Image (cartoon, rainbow, N blue to C red; front, side, top):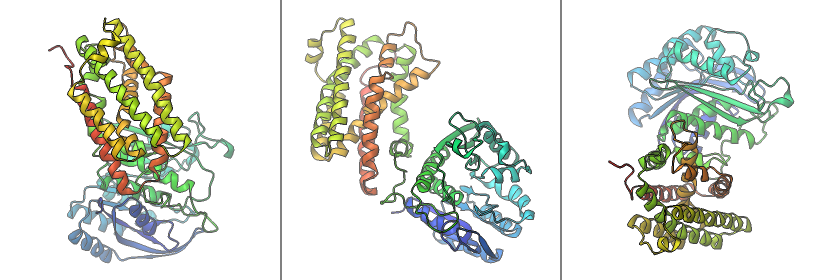
Amino acid sequence: MVAGRVLVIAGSDSSGGAGLEADQKVLAAHGVYAMTATTALTAQNTKGVYGIHLVPPEFLRKQIDAVVEDVGVDVVKTGMLASTETIEAIADALVQHKLSAVVIDPVMVATTGARLLAPEALDMLRTRLLPLATVATPNVPEAQLLLGRDDGVQAVRTAADLETLARDIHQRFGPRWVLVKGGHCPFRRDGTAALADDEKELVVDVLVGGEGQEVVVRIETEYFDTRNTHGTGCSLASAIAANLAKGMDVPAAVRTGCRYVQAGIKTAPGLGGGNGPLNHFHSVYSMPFAPGRFIEYLLGRPDVAPVWDRYVNHPFVLAMGDGTLPLESFKGYLIQDYLYLIHFARANALASYKAGSMKDVAASASIVTHVFREMELHISYCSGFGISREEMEKTEENKACTAYTRYVLDIGNSQDWLGLQMSMAPCLLGYGAIAKKLHADPRSKREGNTYWTWIENYVGADYVEAVKAGSELLERHAVRQSPSRIEDLVKIFIHATKMEIAFWEMYPSSSS
């Protein structure tokens, strides 16, 4: 079953690295259904564009109507548009078919330098098409052309300059979001423009938009000194469209798309004698996440994000941050958490036993070591409240504690090593995320807050190292799984997260 339907309206690239051909590869890699409406045929390869044959606007419109009226469309992505008449036909179709999710890649110049948009079509693009965009994705030269500027990429000195370009397009032409891509002006690690090739370290893309209050998102990726960048703009816009079709919000769709393209550049096959194409299938199983980005993908999924948000922003958690949590609730929680940690240690020991390599055995064992430190901290806390270790261990498990721990151990017995890791991941990742959030929140109470030491423990070096070890385990193994297995793992993660929420709800979060 496909995750969404994307209509690509763009030109064809005979070399397969950009245009409709690249778009369809990207959409296939993301598991969505691709449809096309061809605006132009090109004779091109990695070295240049040798000819353009425009499709008549009337026939283009027939292509759009045919797929919309039969298969249906969740997201539209546009690429090379070439002429004023083409843009007008597309804008009319979007309005008449009420296609509201639109990713516009304002293709003007090919990577090889060939001009792909007639100058007289630029104003039509600004006035008719950009106001219909959910996301517009210009690179720096394209952003400057849209704004009527010719100051060149050298005018971009910091990420703030990229932000200004995105904001100006957003305010002047009306796209809901604008992503200005920074590939033409890589930065040094300190965030300033690289003046020499050996200083190029980062690529920064800046997203500006949102409903009501402005949102600004900066995505940093590693710079690669490579000639294999043919079709990067097409591929990124299609990856964003695919992610939107799968239910992601715009910031998550853009972040995930950027990571996908980064991996495609890094693993490019090196074809052709000019600007070579990306590796669109850099994951053997066409994974929807780039290597090393599984957790980011997981937490951004539309079926995970609301549950995760409820967990890390639970009233119990927030009450610890501002110091208003009833002390009796905290005492009860500490005892139940101590009982939970006993089983958590058992589960990690089981994970070490089930691990297939010494590296994984050592990582699981290191987490067990931290769990013991955490248990000692709970004993210290409770001792300060007049509760002995013996009293803690004699306390009956709360139903929520029993249900959660037995679920984890059941997964450990009935599933493989990775399934067990996923059942424990909400606890390991969540406590780190919660403490980091509370520690950085200026509204959190520090002085005189009984729970501040608890927060500091989970942002401490020991726990950060445990989270890093657990995260690396998941990332290393997630890329080896089939798509169906990933879906099974996600279900385990969601269920375990819901049990974490039930754990917070064992005791009142306020005195009222």
